[in-house]
Length: 309
Image (tube, rainbow, N blue to C red):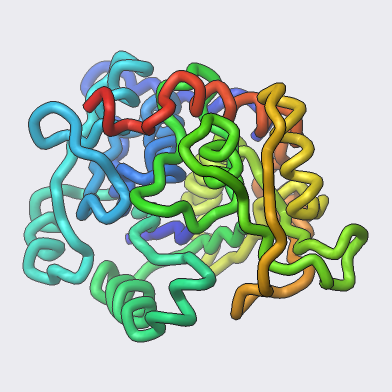
């Protein structure tokens, strides 16, 4: 069993011949933001995704299917299998692995909000460590390290829909732009950066999803444990991101500076050169495209998935 934890080229299309079964890939947390975009890329690349999710950060659609995945099926014209499941439910996982033969696992069922991780460290330990251990006992692994996915599918049909107050910058910014929130809180403007606000590496979620497809191909080489950074290699500050979103939306985005947030650092961005060398992957979509696609999603879905589900 092999796993991914998590090209500007077209997706690799696996078109099985007569009598050849397409390869099954288990996607944990696959109804969420990054997961749903990756499931779409898997379907378009010819894989058969089996998705599990506990609806921690997903909206129910018609029947038992999450709304995000219902839209993925609609966009691709292809079907997927979904089961509501928590990765901490070991008996359910064992039953799932007896039922299916997976060629790989893409693991998104984790928690990753900086502020919340400081407030609830044991929850993060339980889900991120214990849950992952229960998921698989032995694997070849490609570990994908990335920071701040943003943007949305170009159709505007799927995108980031945080349940409750967004923990990430860009969904908060877009909700201010659409009028759901009054103003953005900027956590500190006294960092050692160009404008005093925190600098991060932002990556378009579609580029990120395609990076997972590239990593699946790498697993077939029986590569052992490999680690790759997926990012643009360029850091942008909070205020640079606000200005870019103002340009995309044509709207002024009010903000106020508040105290620093515990756990934050001044700057954090990736060197993605190894991913280009060994996976043939590089980010193709720049900052303007990230904000344009994010704004299209927000305009078409001002209340996220919930209003249409």
